Length: 250
Length: 187
Image (cartoon, chains in turn red, blue):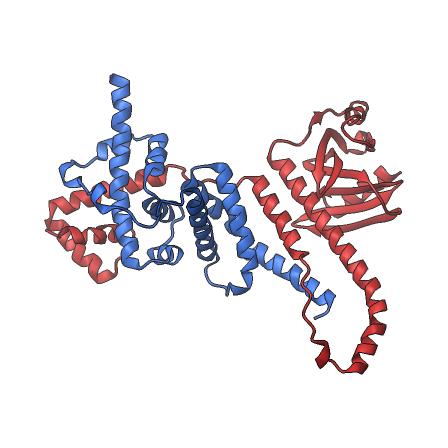
């Protein structure tokens, strides 16, 4: 009979972690030893019982969004490489000074684009969360005349809500959002199976034409019009999403 | 490196991280959830672990991403535990208090068959931490002994011994849950 120190081998055998030679030796032993054979059977039953139970917890959707958002913030942590001025020749410093003025404008543009990308990522994460958490709308109605007033008192602006059901875009309702430091309205539309979240918030910049991009498999259109910024997120194809945006802008 | 180059590098780093490490968020959360026994604590630990993983991403050299991440999750959890109970040493486990009395028990297969999901869950939750984690990694995450040894940073022999004793305790705990339920029912 195998000593109790050999008990580990029984478990390794059950887990297919024993090499061939030892497995065969153990099987020979099990054929002769009732106690060990009973042990193996008992632990096999235990494993089967445990494996049959769904014990795996899945990460909640909002955790995924939070992680994605924080990755963005980590990306924008400034990392300036140290420059030892004494080792840099004077003439390259003069050239560098001239280049600075040129690059400042470029850098500003890149930084702003990165901020835009970061904002877009936040809206996409929000779009995903709204789909998963059964929290698509705070006010559920297809009546635009109900959705708009619902926001009064909750926002200090009045979001645009359109009735495009004639064109095949149904209004599902609205939702209050807080994304990346902005309080925003999310107006929710549907085209066939596809949900479209249109985020809108007051803009500081001038109007700009719709610009389309893709993020994590979703299509995103952003534009500014009449003092408001918009961001439409959906898994709807680009063409129809663009058409939808054109209709909203009319 | 210009500003634009470093920005491009950052974006590439995020993309690589999302492709290689983010898919294991469920495993990370699952381990944290079972070890802390609290969904809010599990979220905090999983999030912190993901951030640390991202900061250390340059040290990841394409080996098993799940094992790499779970090692970070486990270390994050251990730091959290130490902050909770500074006096208690979570690493050691007193053998003498938990001697195996298995030889006195008949095989518990009958109890095992009738054990409900709740019985099994509660039994696992009542396992001491160092047995709970190896049972989880083996049965739920289906990690190999070698992978478990990597995550727990302990020798294979320790892993085998913990699985063996962990299962033995689990068997008794499930049987205990079942007996307890039976007493309540008939008592």
